[in-house]
View 1: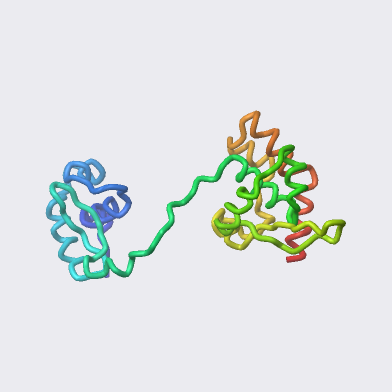
View 2: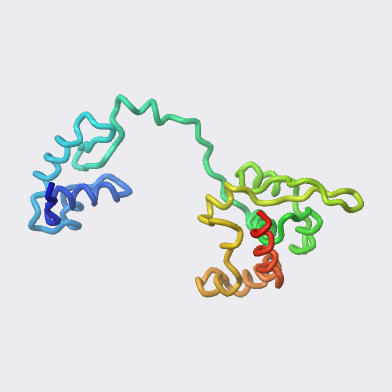
Length: 201
């Protein structure tokens, strides 16, 4: 089957698929060009998608993709609204990622302040940190590590892919205040530690 790359229906389909909100004919036309017969393309697409799992619908003067009405029940889930991590939680997660396994006392030593139990709880509820056994030292403190979900969420194949200070600076992700904290969180020996830990995994 030969596909015409200039087919307006394909262009309209792509625009609607990528749109974050329903679009008017004029909004679609602004993307695909004034010469395209957008209305005819929408009618054709609506016919092609009829009866499928997703469909193109018109509500008022706007068009969009939606799940077929008879399948909506499949997508209903009780979802918790994602919580934004506090600065303390972000710093704690960075310390765990770069220094794992790490104890609460070690996290506090690196951050320079105490962390509340709630900070670690938030990271564990998110599935990004977990207890990893006890250190064989007096008091046998609990240690924490990151999880496979942490790697998945942040698009890392392994801890070896964690960015270094130079990477973060080059990406423009560190202002002068963040740079000092990042240097503490990552530490001078972290890249070697991460590499060694990855080899042992």
